[in-house]
Amino acid sequence: MKNNFTVILCFIIKLVLGITFVYASWHKIEDPAEFAKILYGYALFPGFVINILAIVIPFVELVAGFSLMMGLFPRSAVLILNGLLLGFILVIGFNLLRGHQFDCGCFSLASQTSTASNISYLIRDGLLLIAGIYFYKASATAS
Amino acid sequence: MVKNDLKGCFILIAVAVISAFLFNQFSPFGIAVFGQWETSKGVVSAGSKTQSLNASIEINHPDIIKQIVEKKQRIILDVRPTETYNQGHLPGALSFPLMDFDQMVEQLLTSIKKASPILVYCSSVECTDSHTFAERLKNMKYENVKVFSGGFRQWEEKGFNIEKNEE
Image (cartoon, rainbow over all chains, first blue to last red; front, side, top):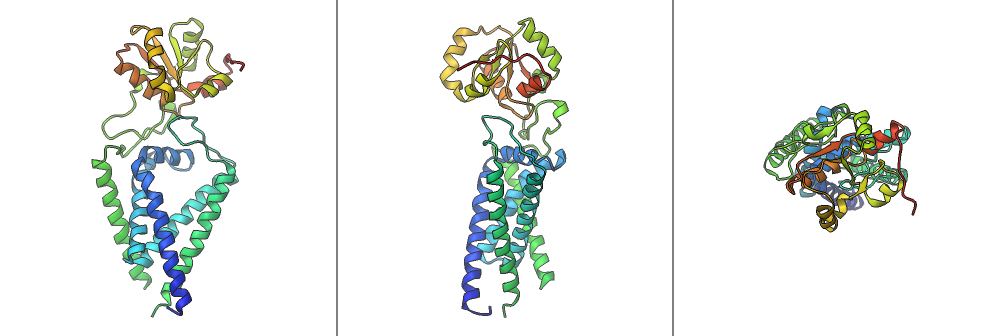
């Protein structure tokens, strides 16, 4: 790495990104049916891929997040996480732009997400993506 | 370096995909590989590995529901939260929120006979609460339970009569 500042920053990014994704994957793994319904609610995915995405995405988050924290294929892990973040930003952003909100009105599903919370998710994901890109670029200069 | 990164991505994604399907296979919360997401076919859900929603108890035609309501052919149960019920519900529907099932089960048993024809509905075709409620009724030996798959949203969209409770 170029200097101590970069080393420390990359270490922090590694921890923050890793913990965020491992934590985020957990409730989706616990309740894939609910996650599938959230994916359906975005009204962007064809029916035949919804369950497959609901089964696979949480494990991609878990494996990449864990791998990044442990330092196993860290550049590959951060590349995957950056891809996921970009995907989340596009999906949330597209639905915000077209004013689409999903509310099944069900007792069993979490309450409707508001425009304000969607914007906060966008900002959060944007910041994480910037951090992820920084990590990828900084680690390329490592000797 | 990029080539190595892509190779790493492939390995990590392969590990994730294999783990995901293995976990889904053995988890009690696992879902079917393909769900039922077509609203034209009734209530949508991911479905479990072993059983999907019982589509045979669904009534998927709002005009038939209208007839049932007008001729009082079935006891209608609204399983949405009370506040939502108060804002508008099918005429003659009784409020039995799914979330209050345990507290209201005694009242349900005393007020509705086991042989009574029952129709359950919730918010919309995207809501599975009516099926959950119907399944519980079935387990309590209620013999004749149907689900209005379109739920309150479809009733409202059809412009049918809505009853409101003033608070």
